Amino acid sequence: MGYRDRGAVNLYRLSHYLYKHHAKILSKLVKYANTMIFHCFIPASVQIGNNLDLPHGGFGVVMHEDVVIGDDAIIFHNVTIGNGGARIGDRVYIGTGATIIGAVIIGDDVTIGANTVVTFDVPAGSTIVGVKARLITATDQQ
Image (tube, rainbow, N blue to C red; front, side, top):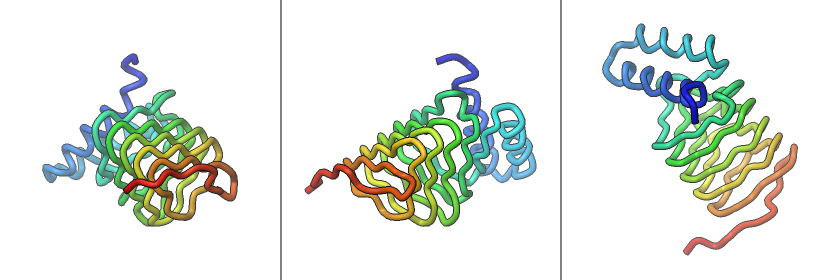
């Protein structure tokens, strides 16, 4: 993974650090740099766990300011996570062009197919696909 592949994540981390340490103006400048350089809109208030992977440099990724993402997530290009503060678990794979809308909870180990529109909570271990998303697999986590 080269510098460009990690650049959007690194700029988000810097913006988030500055935001948490009350350097809001610098934080906004770094966020705008991320938008200009990588075409990736991740507000500093977003909470992201370790090892976020944004293949293709995070091109076209847009997140709402209240989003929370767990560890080891993979988010492909042109993904929108918006409107209301989605909670996304660990080891979640979000395919190209997917849209997550609302205050939904996405469990751990979920795969979201390309161009899927998610408007409901998704249980851990599931795979969902489609423009009107439908659950195609689920595992019982007890």
